[in-house]
Length: 363
Image 1 (cartoon, helix red, strand yellow):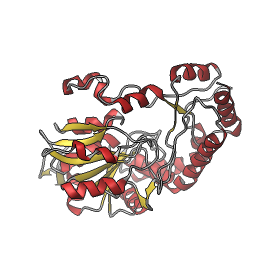
Image 2 (cartoon, helix red, strand yellow):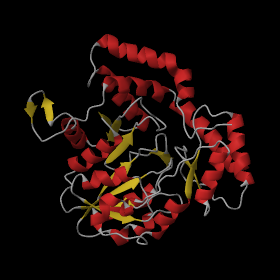
Image 3 (cartoon, helix red, strand yellow):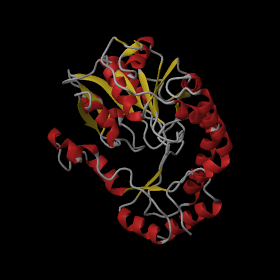
Image 4 (cartoon, one colour):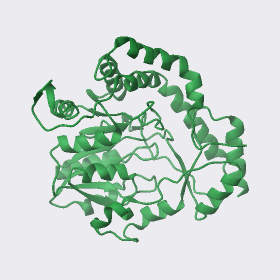
């Protein structure tokens, strides 16, 4: 048995004809940047999220960077961010010369809302909530705090496509919901792509300018912008994938439920789902104090796994200048030392799922 951590082969086989039709449509149109495919996907995804606007961009990182910039957050401003997120979230803050203020996660691996107020200062401008691994933060508490202190809420939804909290789609609670469509995401393109969803007209106009050199009309540049435009090929593929997202999500949840119901090993901590939220299992993350030993054991049995994430941002070499040391965020560091992501992908066979369960139970 040889089980990949993730593979796109099954999706390519299942939807290959639709992919080719979409790509041929783009080729035949002879229009490759910011054309009808992008407009169509933006409209579809905004409708899917029940948001007013969607702005297609080059990547999820750019979605975060440009949202922060469009909100006027910059030098010396502080943004509260979970300490256990992927480093891209933090890079979006420092790219704008703002300061990340880390807060520990809760038992669901998301920003612990009960710890946010202690981190707020006169320089705080926003809370950047990250819906990690496929479920939502406690957005009721986060939005209540933001309202009391007059803060923006920016949502990192890179791993939360199709995730709801209290019946509302992630990405629509704050001022900006930032999505990645990197190929491994639950809604993934065939390359890099991202988007921001928002109900704010002014933010939408500014993001549309920022992504296109600061221009509304070609060669007339109103603000300093960048080149961060979703291309027609990715938009066409994303439209295909979005039409199947409900089925793809259901399949991931089915696999995850089999893991949850069948893994029986007192050395293993299984993921939990927050009340009033769903979980789409972008990643199925377990924890064990014998993480490295388990990972090697599974590899010897033909099962590939990954660690999300081995080095927390506050301990990354690139952020030494922030002055954090080991032990500053013990919960985050514990998660980094104990977490292991199991194989979970669309098209995974029952035999493969059963083999993973069997080997973990034997560990």
